[in-house]
Image 1: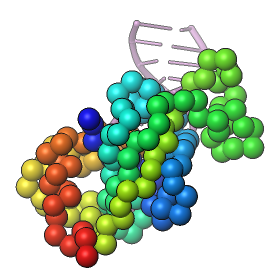
Image 2: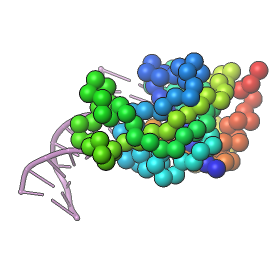
Image 3: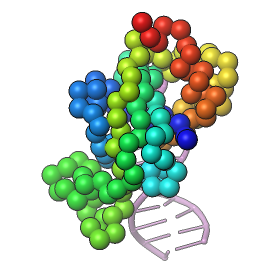
Amino acid sequence: MNYWLMKSEPDCYSIDDLAAKSPAMWEGCRNYTVRNYFRDTMQLGDMAFFYHSNSDPCGIVGTMEIVSAAYPDPTQFDPSSTYFDAKSPIEAPRWVLRDVSFREKFSRVISLAELRTIAGLEDMHVLRKGQRLSVMPVTEAEWTIVNSLSGLRD
DNA sequence: GCCAACGTTGGC
DNA sequence: GCCAACGTTGGC
């Protein structure tokens, strides 16, 4: 079993959107490292943090579960989609996705600034300077620490 | 809105 | 296959 952190801009797609319609396709990832995570590394039943990027504040807002195998992202074939990729042949799709299912919304945002202050999270991928992956691995220890922070659950 | 970081593209 | 130019991400 693996743990993940997955980013979305809440103006585009927030944890409330997922809570309102779950499971849902985690669509639109157009990065080969992320594609390989989706295709090769993720497993059914893996858990992920939902992270709000480009928001105030940025941070972890809840959890979800990976509930499908990898399959082609339909938006790559849809000319009306912002994620359309004309170079992706339908018989050999470039981009895959996973279905995710809402699990929990925390009662507060664990901001990036707070994450930086917590012992045991020093090596967390999301805290590294310059990292830009929208999906990144989280260790079991990091998962446990974040989930045990005070005030996450009423 | 700025800019650092870094992935991608394309000419050679 | 190198690498410069360009585009994107995302925190601030």
